[in-house]
Image 1: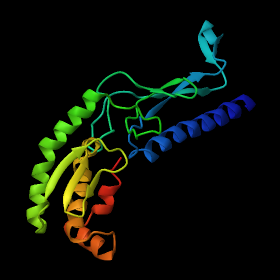
Image 2: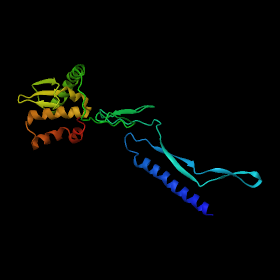
Image 3: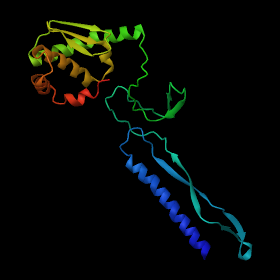
Image 4: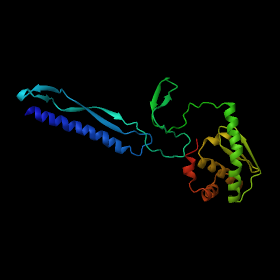
Length: 226
């Protein structure tokens, strides 16, 4: 009788472990890159004994959860609009290199952000970004200039790294080619921001009122700048 109570208690505890795994899956249902886990169980001291009519009967003290296996089966993808968000379709992992320790770790979570260990682009990459900026930005400038009723006097592209855009005292616009690494919404924010400076040269209340008039969600867009 005592062994029966012990087996029941062990079963209840292991059932709680299984519920913990399921609760964690539910809690992370909206977490990007999270993969659900499945609980696996094994027998505790299970062996066969000879019963009536020489029948082999199992004897043991219950089961225990041996591990929680991550389910790597592919699921649906969501378009986030972020430049550094990636997903793996099928098998495989992202390899993450830690420069201070030299260690490599692996993950399926593709929600990346720019780190302090910035790798300088090559001259070819910079020229490609400049060419892309010269091809794409004039159309955006023309669209928003007409919409806002302003007229910039010039436009050029540089490889500046400290700021994405500027507007001179003579209303000439300048943009960094690295702006092209940002999402579309963030690029539009920088364009509209600099066009606002044609009317308001500083960042006073009237400037931000003008910016919000044309881009009510500018604060959300600002978070996309990297």
